[in-house]
Structure formats: structure tokens, C-alpha cells
Length: 368
Image 1 (cartoon, rainbow, N blue to C red):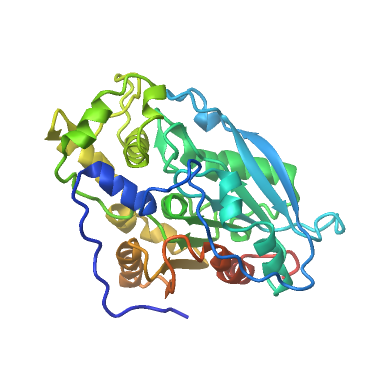
Image 2: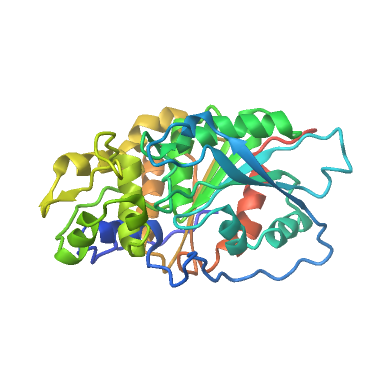
């Protein structure tokens, strides 16, 4: 069922420059912990839930090789195998790929969504058993944006080709698009929207949780407090000492405005020497899903189901509604729910009660 608000107001007060937009769009507020771990509500334990198995592996990605930042092409990946995986050696399973948000990696992501408890709980409450894969796409600037860049590497292809190929080759999967789901939260929600639109030949159902970065933003006014620290960066080590919001801008620039001729960071910022650079802002705008969704309507029609959700106290609510409205405009079936919560408070409960049941309903399983 679609739940909507009749009136949605856009997020205001983005003044302070593109760095502030990046901070807000990627996570709404600077985290207080060094690892950006946030507290999320834990759903009640489901009685009788059977244990899943978590395997920690590395997946080599040719798409990430040779990037200018020196990101490793051997990516950490968590694979969650359902309770029946070992006891039913002839059974094959659908796979759901779950993408984490900005400033965290896969290990922090499973903490925020309380895996294994939520996956076990979803199965115990009736969701069909599936494999859940959580890749790590954290970079030196805390996030890849799941994009393709010579600076960071091609994380889009890592997810859509290298990772999927590895999982199909090493686990008992149903290796077809109708049995693959893609979900992500925040930056991961952006990744799900971007990869979902561009790789509908790989995935069969799509879920975006509080997706960030959907619409282009103006640079806004920039003061010395923003420009001076960025201008002082001479090494990657210097960049890693910057405040969270400034690192968010570097992550965005590394993904969307790379510059192989500009060491040591190999990127262009949207403001240089106090002046806005329209060419860089144009590159950022070209990576906004609300700017390119019209080009992928035919691809999106291939999905059996598309879902978007967002909290009623989440500053990303207005853009999520715009994406829903864009899909509606083309007659694309999609569910859109605004639920009580902020950007992160209920992500664990949503994963158990909504995300996995959604894929249970909309992916193709063996024998059905």
C-alpha cells in the first residue's frame, strides 16, 4: 500500500556551500562518533527464529583496479546464508544485495540494521529464505557514491558485475535477474537508484531506503571556513583530518568530478579560489537521478517491483517524493511510504518488516 503526504515541503537552509549540501544530502548531520556509527531501534527478537550464517570474504574487482586514490580492488563482503542453506544442499536461493550509506562500511552497516537478528526475524515471520550480500564500498573519503570514476574506481561495475558474478560462481544462487534484488540506505539508496536504473538487466526488484543525492544542488555561498581547509590539503592524509562535512564534499567530487591531472586528490571541487565552477556543478547535476531518470524509463519498466521509503522527519523526504512522482508520471508501478522516524532511527525495523518481505514477494524462488 502506498502511504503519502499530500503536502511536502523541500529542505531549506542549505546555505554555506556545496560542502554543506554534501553533508546534508549524504547523511543529514555530522555524526558524533569517529566511525559514524548511529543508534537505531532494535526490533523485538522473534521467538523461534533460526540462526543464519555470516561469511566474511574478499571479492576482487577488476573494475576498481588502477584507481588514482589507491582504493583496494579486494573488497570486504559479508554474505548472510539462510538457515536452510547447509541442510538443503540441492536448493538454490535468490540474492539480495544491500548497500550501506556514507561514512560507514559493511561491518558498521550490519550493526545499524542489527544483522543477524533482523534477517533471522524476517525469515521467522514468514519471508522466504534468501541470501543477503553486504559489500563494503567505503573509500579514503568515506564513500564511493557507487559511481564510476578513475579517481575512486568503478564501484558501479563492482556491484553490478564483479560482485554478482563472484556470488553466482561461489554460492548456490538462482543466477538470473528475476532472482536478484537491490536495496540500499542513504548513499546506498542513491546507489540502488543509480545502479538500478542503469543495470535493469541484472536485477529484478528494487528498494530505495531514504535515498540521498537525488537532485542537483547549487553551490551556495562559500566562506573561508570552507575554502581554506580544502585549499590547505596537500595529501590524502591531510584530507582524512578534515571535518566530516568537508570529507563528504571530497567524496562527492572524487566520484563525480574526477581529474586525473590534478594530484594529490585527483578531483575538481565546485568552488575554486572563491568562485563557483559551473562546469563542475554540471557534472554533479548529471549524476543526480532526478536529472537522468527520464532516460531509463524503459529499463525501469523491467522491474517486477520498485519501492521507496523515508522517515517523516528525514530531510531527504521531499526528494524521495519527487522520485516517486516521476515514476508515477510514466505509469511505473511503485510503492512509496513515509513512516514515523528520522533518517536512521527505524532502518533496522524497516529492513526486517518491509525490505526482506518485499523481496520475498517479488523475487523468483526455486519451485515457485
